[in-house]
Length: 256
Image 1 (tube, one colour):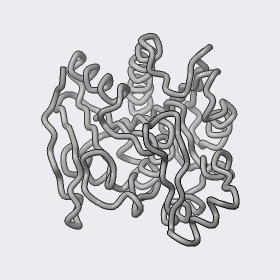
Image 2 (cartoon, rainbow, N blue to C red):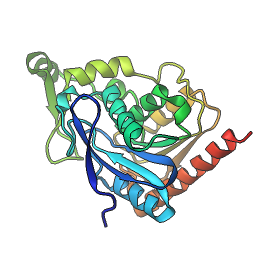
Image 3 (cartoon, helix red, strand yellow):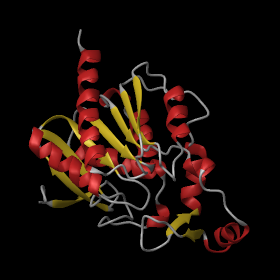
């Protein structure tokens, strides 16, 4: 069942982004999809259904250039897409946020939180992949040549029927948006889920993220046998429990 009609919202510069918003009690669950993904994925749909059952507020979106949103995909980047999500939250869900970032969305989630830390009550990462262009995207000679000649290269992906496309703008932004080699000045509760059989993002990435975060309330849960998607019924049930745990910790941290 589909909840919340799709709305096209101007992000402020004439580019309209596709969103689905469910009003309810806060903080707003804000889903940030992975690379070349959108709000039609299984985790996004499950998060919205979870919000319906629990009366929580929820916001889904397609980044610019992705899904049903307007804009050029090749203009997209980690910080551009984080700004897209924050702009939609400003328009539809002013108030406290609980971003849930999947894969690359976990990287964008961190930049969103750094842009407005007082508003973010907690973070939940699912196979979060900050800095993946450094540790997971080594270019071969043909890809470097394509990047020089046409401004992008493509690479097959097991998660899509068509190849993934990587633009010069994305890669240049990613290099300066890297976070894992320094301190990440966020103090909110953070919950990280990661499958032990994830073939795309090593579990060590989540361990590095946990170490880099300044927050003292960070928990990493390893899911035995879990793959990169973590979209099995048991994994989705764990995601629900993790969100509730993060909200409880945020409430406790805000108590006088």
